[in-house]
Length: 222
Image (tube, rainbow, N blue to C red; front, side, top):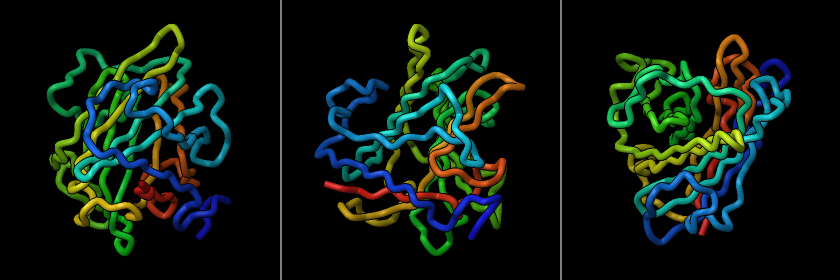
């Protein structure tokens, strides 16, 4: 399948999630012990495969028997932050401000059903149950996965860091095991309008993140 010159259908990208024997505290710090030696993938293109200068995003992943972890390292040129942020309740329509996003699904047959997880530089969050064919009430944001986030901003370096701990059971009915794969994509929305930046791991060929045909894969590895 091709959209606007971008090759789709299980995009070429693969991120390998490194096993951890135990869960660990979220730090939003790539220098933390839990993240040492974990190789990242890089998101640095827009939806149409053009480089987005100054926003080369690194994404790392780990997994345990219960949780899937992601760490985003997000260089920025300008921040677009929500006033009066809440870190105790989810923020609907968080994508109107700066966010890093994980779209992930374990159903390789019904690929238009998946889950969406977002974290902001201020530690806000939202999670959504997505069904592109039969949309859920309120866009799916009333669903709750029980995931956790941590974020921090280094204004001197102009980098923000976002970390997620996602219960695997919220994505996949299978017990977590090395070799398991899921379908996944990563995105960022960054900066104030009208100069907002959209960054993709696997470009979608459309001004829309919700193109599951473009997703890559995540593999759990030992």
